[in-house]
Image (cartoon, rainbow, N blue to C red; front, top):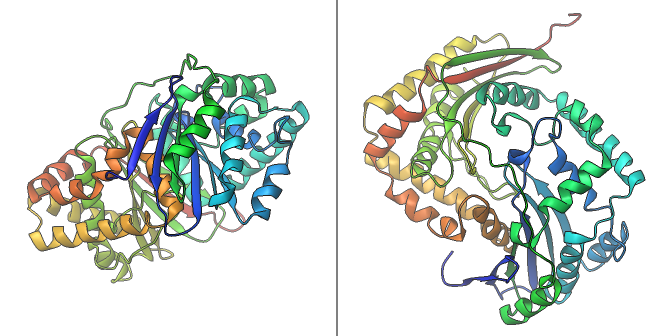
Length: 428
């Protein structure tokens, strides 16, 4: 992310990434923990996400709701996210209020209360969230596809967890998960905005320096290789829309093939945004499958999904179909277009257009201060900050031969999952 980014490590292992941006008096502050659903075991799925919820239930120093009022009063906002590979907490607020965020996050790294009554109230919340998701066709389809996509790897589970586990996880298990994984040597602090690095580092040393490192004992699952066969899953449920999801094994983010697949995604469906916290968007109307499916009214929409992950995950192509339109026709169009990419080199002008669109989406997703800080920590979860720094150069290196090889390696019609969701017939 160029010379503006500085990296510092405390003696207890806490990594601090700073990028000074002085054009507006704002700072975005993130704390990232290397713990997510990837590290969960059967019987405790969803525990990382539930712990994230509990981090907003207060500490002795900062009781529940006290900080929310203080941050809102000063014109800031805070949030948290749990994903496959990580959990993160953020505050974006006026520069002169940064110490609120620094002190809060250092405090709740070690002092969150996990009050038993609040734990039970939050059990109701996360189960309700899970049940709400079950009414969403794409959640149900994604859960079914992931269960087929991974034999044992925890990526097979949804971040929210399985309902049975959410009903049985105890307060002590939640607290134990928190105490095991929330330590400085398992964390990255990332800041971007209007601050002085030396001053901030001194304050972080004061707040975190006496927190001891610990053996996190984090589960490191064995990555899974290529899908061994063709799988299909058909679902019915509430709604009035037909969804078709085609999923292939994707490479890990630090694999050299990742950027070739990014360009293939841009060619086929339009570029995917890696910025989970929000960014811009660009039209996918020049993509091949949009022109072949949407422009011809065979599909209502087409999109792709590629995530940057620690281990190999899934690349998805998702189509929304008109009522009573045959799915097999859509599959034939997708397969025919992928076959062209496998057998013929993509013209240089098509590659450049796809790269340009992917670069533009990347730029939209990294332009404001909050997203600048996001990228600092995010890329550190599966690689390091240089991954972000080299994102555009690595895209620009992709050539026709690499695209053809990646299409053959990853987009194999005999090694994929086809999932179809149809509305349940009335009265059925």
